[in-house]
Length: 456
Image 1 (tube, rainbow, N blue to C red):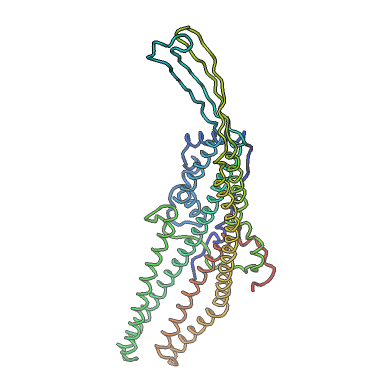
Image 2 (cartoon, rainbow, N blue to C red):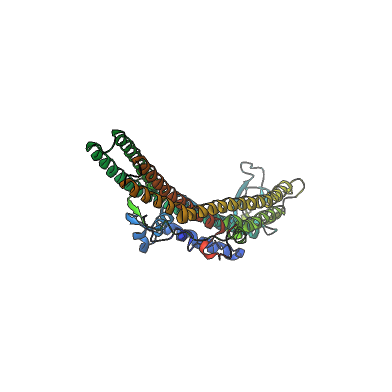
């Protein structure tokens, strides 16, 4: 009766792995980052050669997997996040670089002929090097690496969000596609009924009022058909936009809309919420904020500047070595404000993590209630409402042929049946969209969660 899927909607989050964040040593971070930056400069963000065919925009009849591949390769938001990751890699490279040496040239006593000997003309060349103390470089590299890891978490969050949107948009297209097929069937039946009534009116068997009713019903069904076609086109464009396409090239989507499975309990899902990248990232976030505190404390330690040079005395034609050190005295500025700022931002991150836990937990509860309602409604339509509407329609049709029911009764039962079928399709669409949202929140496929008992 409805279009059949070839790929379940729940496969939307298959293969998604949480980003693995790790902190490397300060001495190996710079070569690693340099290699990544060099590779990125040689190979821009493009699909591999063996993925060129997959990167083409989907055309013809497509599956959910094809839509996911196209979105993951061409979604502009994901491309922007990948560039941010590369920017953070460059920041790690920059954080590991040491200060440049400074060359100073100084000429003294020019234009004064009364000064002779070692008090005469002097040209001095000095080379100075800032020596960072207090572990500034190591702290800077660690903070940059953790910031890079956060960019990875942000990319993973966005990637799962894109996959969820693709699954939901795919379900929307599939539901609109099925409703359009249903509207066409309804219009075809309404045309047959209108033609049959017209023939009966011409034969004088029924009143012309019945013909008017049949024509009104036909006009209503045609309006519904037009609306279904526009909804279908809008859904197709929303899906294609996820892989940066303005005009969809695919014709239909393939899948099984009527696949509905029992859902686990809310408690089972709450146990898995820690896999959500929006929550998992906060461990790295807090470590990064603490690294920034350590960096600000390291900046409070004064750095030493070593100086080594040579002076050329022109009159005696002789040389002298120059050596020295420069050390700022931390009398007024001991980076007190920077340390306090970093500590307050660390405390802020703790509060933000609590807010994120509440936000994601609330979203899980809301999504679960939507899924439970859609599942219960889908089961009700499948087991009771649709069979009852079909039985009533068949009975009224038979009674109408025997003269027991009027045409108005036939039209009413027909309208009730097709309205129930259309609503059933909407419920199925809402069910699969809710499944995709829950899978985003728990970070894994819902099919992997065992169903121990009926959901409450």
